[in-house]
Length: 299
Image (tube, rainbow, N blue to C red; front, side, top):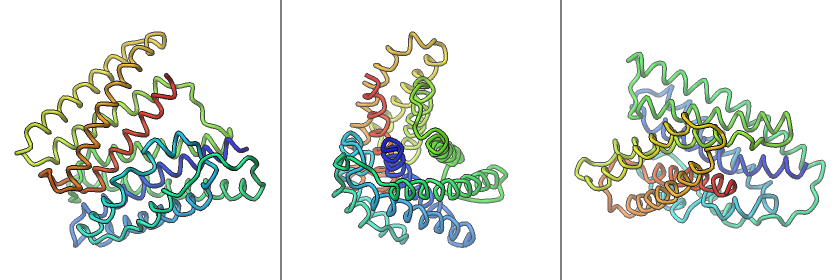
């Protein structure tokens, strides 16, 4: 039961923040006149902010040190990125949640109560309900955009990208509710999923940088190419050959994380010309940190 509680809370700390930010990016991308879409995105942003706030209240002493130290829950740039993004978009962001996350402790609760178990199960069920709605909303947006009936500043591929991440979150919570644990057997599938995500991040970064940022654009293109090659090699290999590829993926992702960290520093410091929101720069850095932790656990 402790493993179920810990795995649930660690999942929400990472993905709950990702979902609330997805909603914010959608909201910020709609024209001012699209009030229905903007309001619905704002509602999901607010609801996932509540999920994250609830998770933080439950998580103190219950989560692993590896997760707390990974940089997937928050980074050194998160608070500043939130404040800057709130000012730029005029969308409210509660940075007190991030400040509370910084005070979380790991692994100091030895025994869990039945009450804690009930609260986490309730949190999981509420999150699944919200995810069902958010996924349908994202799919509706995608259908309207590709049918040329709706404008957004977000790429269609980015909308597909955030649908896939929401479905992974949904899948993990369902697994926890059905089996009380998360299966780690399908590492090859996990690598392919996150390699695809990392490749698309590089494509988005390239497309959102100012055309004058030639060197950064070339680096982003190079990372997109590397992850594309890793995906192609993974499709051709059997399970026995995956270990060498995992090692290569780990090294690539370390370099990519460093590139993203430099990007987050440059964007929050107003040193990079782009149309990348500061919180988006921090968002993709946290996802790289999350993937690095998964890869390092398999080493």
